[in-house]
Length: 141
Ligand SMILES: [Zn+2]
Image 1 (spheres, rainbow, N blue to C red):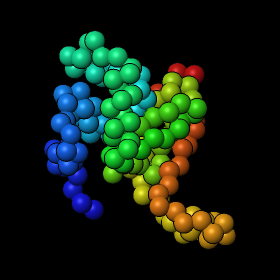
Image 2: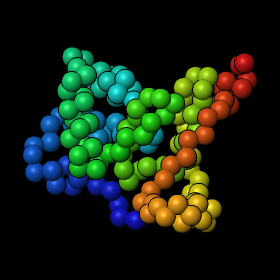
Image 3: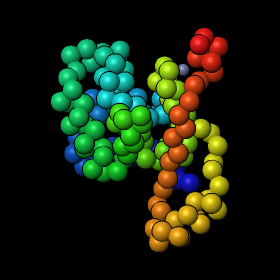
Image 4: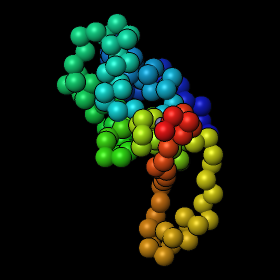
């Protein structure tokens, strides 16, 4: 797999990479998991963007989505975003505390290949969302 270089990636956009855009990319790179707009705004506010508004964040996300730098994923009815190249195949979602844990596991293709063949569907990528209770919540419930 090609090594992802966020600087090169930003430079390839031709347009100037604003400070906010750089900060959003850094947030995705550091978190390594799907983030909601609320998560991104919270992170930005803790990084000296105290006056950041939703519209700006959505505009930046659209820019990154259009260039397929990030992809959207629906988790328990709420839209999340993640770096396309870091896209984990499996996500564990705690229905109790809403925590998201990306799986490090690479899932095997055979059963997916069989299912997609039967439906004559060409798969480019896939993700699995496991709903359940995280370790912390299991102790506290
Ligand atoms: Zn939990």
